[in-house]
Structure formats: structure tokens, C-alpha cells
Image (cartoon, rainbow, N blue to C red; front, side, top):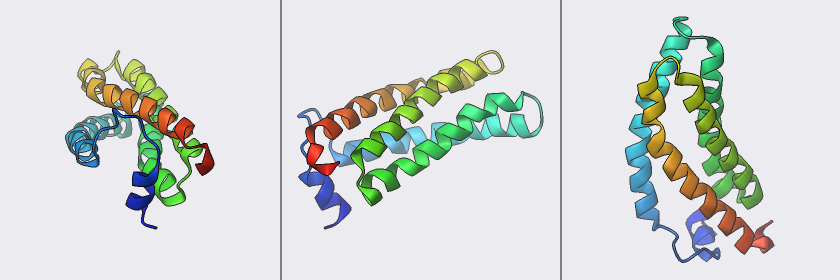
Length: 134
């Protein structure tokens, strides 16, 4: 069974966005992430801000990138929930870490935080609604 057939077969809350909507949201967010994360990593590598400011950005990037393989490759709902919680927590950490240095970067994360907050609740609901997938 394909990943899409598997996902469509899962029980989901009635408010689950359509896959096209989710894709559109990420198309908006990824350029924001690319620019702001790239800026932070450049500042870290040039030693204009402390390396520890870049740590939550690096953790977030890895956690964000592994979500899809965990969710749709491994089809592991509980692990995907843990991963998205890491993504969510590191966004807060990122915003706090960069705020004293570049407030615009922290502010740029607000749409990302809002979407990941919704996605985290959605992932928790899907995980709880599908215990047979654990």
C-alpha cells in the first residue's frame, strides 16, 4: 500500500486540512525557514553570534526533515508525534535564543510556530485515534 493510501485510511479529526492545503502551507513556510535559518547559520559560522544560538535551529532543521520519513516511511505515529513535539519545542527555543541578536528572525518564526502548533495537535489526534497503528 502506498503512503498516501495508508494516510487516507487513518482515522482523522474532521478538521484535518486537505493534503493540498498542507502542501501549500509548507510552500509558504519553507522560504521563510530557508532565509531565516540560512541567515542564522551564516552569522554563527562568521562568529557574529554565539554558536549556542544556532543549536536549536540545527535541531529543528533535523527534526523537521525526519518527520516525513518517520510518518510516511516508517508509518510510526507515536515516533512522529515525539518528533513534531521536538520541532514545536525547538521553535520556541529558537525564538528565545535569537531574540537578543536579531529580533526579525524570531518574529519570522511566528507563522512556522502557528502552523506547527496546529500540526502537533493534529498529529496527537491522529496518533490517539489510530492505536492499531502503534
